[in-house]
Length: 231
Ligand code: NDP
Image (cartoon, rainbow, N blue to C red):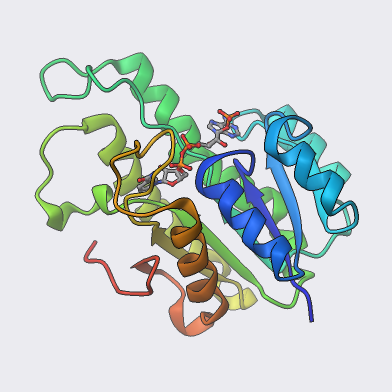
């Protein structure tokens, strides 16, 4: 039975790789992106006109979320994947010189948006069979990792971990599972070409792990292989 996944930031990087793998195995993908009609998504839409549903979505914009919500009214979603993310400026992230404007911008995308998106599309998830909301966080948000620099990015991922756990508690009684993932260090624009794994490796691991998860895994923090990560 094909599933329907909704993925934010589906136009490049890890989000695009997950979209490609899901379409390959016959699932449907609601590919949400600021520009879902260009680049790689346009090519995929031509190949999979029935299975790929492009939706315009800037995850920081209430108006954009409202328009996407209206466009998807009544559409069941099995897995909602908060993937869109920002790193922030590489050179202004130490404790002594953090760029506060950039910090606010990164929090909009990495922390507030996953909650906004989860709230907006919760009715769609409740209409689906999968009943899963997954968020791509990062091992860099782990306090146990004894962080060095990257104040903006690390604090945003620590914050989204806590925010989604609270959200998970809010929807536990509705049988919706909420999960956090580290995708590995992945060769994307954000991860850089020297990263450990390809987007396809990360995507396949994440899909396999999310497929095998349910309410027993709600409020867990794991990597793309399914291994638990210390908060
Ligand atoms: P990329 O930089 O390659 O892609 C980021 C994606 O997020 C793009 O699709 C981008 O869209 C989208 N995005 C950013 N801002 C917005 C917005 N306001 N509205 C909608 N979409 C937006 O990153 P990755 O693919 O590497 O990262 C995906 C996720 O994985 C992120 O959450 C990241 O933090 C996390 N991660 C990545 C790691 C890595 O090694 N790559 C390691 C750990 C975590 P657009 O093209 O329009 O800019």
